[in-house]
Length: 268
Image (cartoon, rainbow, N blue to C red; front, side):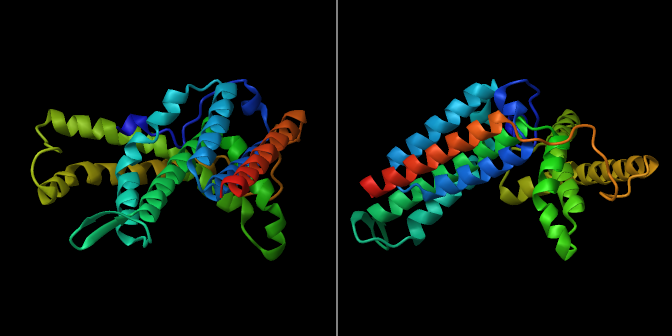
C-alpha cells in the first residue's frame, strides 16, 4: 500500500506537460481543482475525468499508476462518504431505518465530495509527477515573490513545502523497510483489536522518527556545507520563461472551465 502513494514522486520525461513552466502548472492545477469543486452533477465529473485523462496521456504517465495513488486514501474517502450520509439534511427520503433516514440530497452530496477528493489527489499527483523538486521550488517562490514586499518569507516557505513534499516517498520507502525488518523479527501488525494494532505500531514509529530526524539533520548539514543562506542574491541555472506550451495549456484550462460552467447552468 505504501508504494501506491504517488504524491511527491517525480516521473522524469520530455512530454509537453513536463516542459511547461512550473508556475503555469501550479496555477492550472489550482484552477482545475476549483473547477472540480464547481461541478455539481455526474456529467460534469465525467468531463473532469476526461480532461484529466487527456492530460495524463499527454504526459506519458500511465493512468492506472495515477489511480493507484488513490488506493491508500480509500479509508479517508469512505469516511467522508459515510459522514455526509449521516450529517447532510435532505427533503427526498430514499431509505429509512429507525433513527437514520437516507435522503437523495445526502447521497448526492456524499458521492460528490468523495469524487472531489479523488480528483484533488489525482490532479495534484500529476503536478508532482511532471515537475522536479527544483522546478517546483522555483515556481512557488516566483508566484509568492510579490508578497516579499510585506516581508513574507517566500523562498523559505517554498523550500519547506518542496522538501516536505519530496520527503514523502523517501519516508514511505523507509517505513516499508522498517516494517519488513520488524516482521522478519516476529512483529505482527495485522492481527488483534484496534488497541493491539496501535501498540504494535510503536516498534515501527520509533525508528521511523529517529530516521526522519537523522535525515533532516544530514540535510541541514549539507545545506550549511554548501553555504546556503536562503534566497538572497541566489542565481539559477535555468530562468523560468513562459512559452507557447503554457499559452496552450491556459487556453485548454479556460475551455474546460467554460464547458463546466455552461454544463452546470444547462443541467443545474
